[in-house]
Length: 205
Image (cartoon, rainbow, N blue to C red; front, side):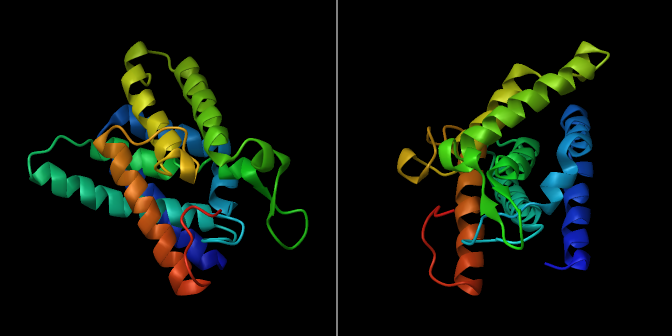
């Protein structure tokens, strides 16, 4: 992906963040970018399977967030309680463990030791926990901190976004927000794979 395209997805990321209605979630996402934004915007979405290039993680996450917001909005219009803000934030953060799963020692992205021994889902869970902790510690007022319920819903999305243990998730989606992100993740990765590099194999990253 060239720098112009990468900037398009960075801009779309910020559009999604600025459209969040929850002020605390919006503040957290701005904090997230200050902490690890450079790595997030430059990392790949996988090594070779889908979005396997510089900026692929942001492209993949933004695409899922857009799909997931539309799905959540549809259910809201049907009278089903779904948090569009949690869906968007969960989609944008679902693969953050890939920041630690890949590195580029030469010309190609390679797996890190952490990816081989821990996998990107538990890596992302640990990263999110630490980011939540640091964000809440720097908040001057309690009402500006992320509460346990929101953190738990986002962490659940990270852990469950592959759908089941056979596909790499330790737990299956148990909330509407998590199910929406899981299905949009499958769709985005699958369509990208089929239209670029060949047959799609579920969650072969």
